[in-house]
Every structure is written in C-alpha cells, then in structure tokens.
Amino acid sequence: MARRSLLLLLAACSSPGAPPVVGDPDAGVPARDAGALFDAGIDAGIDAGVDAGVDAGVVFDAGFDAGAPYVDAGFDAGHSEDAGFDAGLDAGVEVPDAGPVVPFDIEGFGRATRGGWQPGGDEVLVTSLSNDGPGSLREALGTATGPRVIRFALDGTIALTAPLLVPSNVSIDGRGRQITLAGKGLILAGSDDVILTNFAIGNVAPSSEDGLRIGDPSGPSERVVVDHVRFFHTGNGGDSANVDEAISVVFGSREITLAWLRFDAWEKVLLAGNGDAPAAVDAQITLSMHHCWAKHTGRRHPQARYGTYDVWNVFLDDWRMYDWFYLEPFRESFGAQSQDGARVRVEASLFKRTPQLKDGFSQANDATRCESGGRLDGVANVTTADSTAPLVFGAGCSGATGWSRPYPATVDAADSSLRTRLETQTGNTL
Image (cartoon, rainbow, N blue to C red; front, side, top):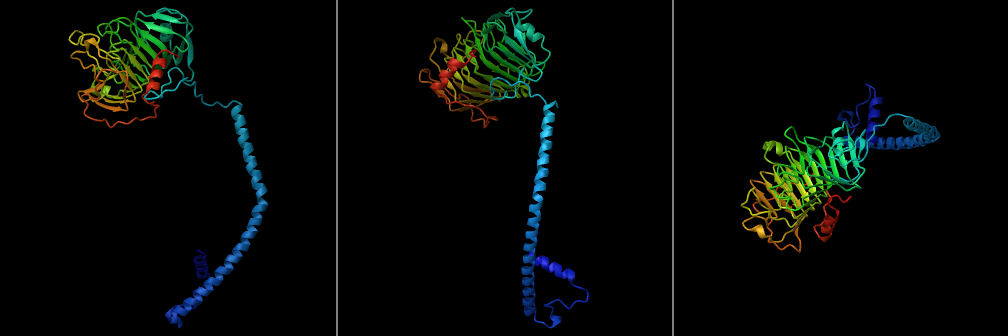
C-alpha cells in the first residue's frame, strides 16, 4: 500500500517535459537494470516515509493525550444529559402501562390469552350465590363493559336456571374459594380473551346442554384458557342420554388451552368440530390440552374433527361403555379419536382401563384411533401397570401427521410421579 502511494506521489510530481520513464527501450537503458534502480528508489522512499510517518504518529499521540481530558469531559456531560432525561421521565412523562400480569403460566395455543388481566381492567367481587340479581355471577358477567376479573367473596354452589354467557376480556377466577356451577354451564358465543380458573361445573342437563361451549354460529372464540376446572356428574347423570359434552369447541374457535382439568363420570368429554360448520371453518381450530385427568368417563378425550390438536400429559383412567352399544342414543367408548382430516398429537400420556360388563361388540379398548382420514401421532405414551384391558393404539390411523409443536411446552415423563400429580392437582385445587 505504501509503495502504491509513493508511485502516485511520483506521478503527480512529474512534468510534461520529464525524461522517458525508466525501463522504456527508447531511453537506452536496459529494462532490467532500470527496474532495479527504480525498486531501490522506491525502497528508500518507503523507508524514509515510514520513519516520517512514525514520527508524525508520535506527535499525533501526544496531541490525542492532550485532548483526552476534554473528550472525557464532553462524554461526562452527555451522561449528565441522560440523567436529566431520566429525571424528566420520573417527573411525569407518561409511559405505556403493560397492565396486570396473568397470575399463572399458560402454555400451548392459548398462551397469548390475558382474559380480564389487561390495562384498565376492573375487579368485581361476587357476593351472592343466587342465580341472578345483585352481587351474583350473572350480574357480574352481564354488566361487563371492559376487561374485568371476577372473584368470589364466599364459597358454595350456584344453582343456575340458564347457561351463563361469558363476554370478551373476562376472567372468572375462583382461586382460594370452592365454587360450583350446577345445573347449567357456560357459553362463549364468539367471545375472545377469556380465562376460566378454579371452579367446578356439575350435573348439567338436559341432553342438549354442554358444560362449556366455546364458539357460536355468529363467529369463533379466540384466545381462551380453561385452567384447573372440574367437570363432573353424580349418579348416572353423565350418560349421553342426559347431557351432551363437558366441553365443545366449535365454529372454528382457536388459540385455546385446556390445562389441569378433571373430568368425572361424564360420558362425552371433549368434542372439537361438531360438523355444524363448513370444513374450512373448523379447520381453523387450534387446541392444546395438557395435564388433565379423566376418570370413569366414556369417550372423546378428545374427538377431533378438522383442525390441529396438541395433547400431552393426560391420564385417561378407566373409560367405559355407559350402556349397551345398540341402545339409543348412540353409545360407544374410546380414548382419543381423530377424524375428517384432523391432525392430533398425543404425547407422554397415561392410559389405564379394566374390562367392563358392557364392552361387548364395542371399540372401548381403542386407546387412540382414526376415522375418515383423521391423522394421529402417538409419542411416548404409557399403559399403566394396573391396566388389564387389551388396549389398542392407532386403530385405523394411516401414519404420522408430520406435525410438530409450534411453541415450547413442559412435557413431563409419563410415569407414576405424573399420575400422582394429576390425581392430586387437577380440577379446582387452587
């Protein structure tokens, strides 16, 4: 680089009348000898120039040292300006409020849900166990005009005479209380951003009713979380002759997480995509179900039509036929089912079943199965040591879905420790 710079300098200093360039045959000097002289001149020039440059650098360094205190002083002054900016913020410059934080972790498709825990949200306290009227849960839901968290000032059972309609941007938070909704359930008629946690829904009737319906012909529900809720029936009330699903997810509802739920003696647990909407609509369903326990239930854990479903760490405990298969209404029994192009992944889950009197001619031993083009991945699932029925996995399934989880998830090993946790921590245990 130094040699090239010197060449440019020499060229700039030459005049139009200068002698021929060294090495030109017309100069009468052999090119090789002229080249040697030329190289020697360049080397000498480089050495001289480098020495001069070093000396100049020493001078520059001295100047830099002399100026350093002034540079440092300017830098410190800049920091003082930053301090003043911070002080101005503290003095009242408005900073956007991130709002309250959801008080528990959410995983799965519903992980962005905030319910009533949003900026500007209210907290409403339920003070009455009445079906309706002042201080009731129905009033708290019906008067909601913005984000709100509904909590309870007392324990007990709310005997509902009609389902409760849950609006958008609401949390029903029963933590620290023992609350049961009896007789009727909840409907999310296209409501978005809803969190339901720590209460029970039981003994719902008649046969057309669900414990919880998510979605409506008017539109889907988006961002819904159901966490630590118990769905139960006593006696023979959970038979499909008496009640419909514990949970139904319909009309393309999406970004849903069902976590730490407990289902007791409810024949039809979870139906997602019921055929009342076009296939293209229900194909939008996205649902995660994890850390749930279903005991003495019948079927649909889940039954998935269209859409995408991620199921992990569930315990299907002794599902069964509720009556003989040939009796009306139509009865059957199975674990999880994928149909009509649904993509289902069932991972690290526990399966336990004992033979039942009414098993004859049924498919009750199908732990997982597919119908009508449904696809299902079974990954690291376990049959418990006390299961005595001859379980069948992947009945009718043509192969893997190739679907992979699009978010991080806490997946526990399917072992006795997981079983204990599910038996003691699911449902309204907070």
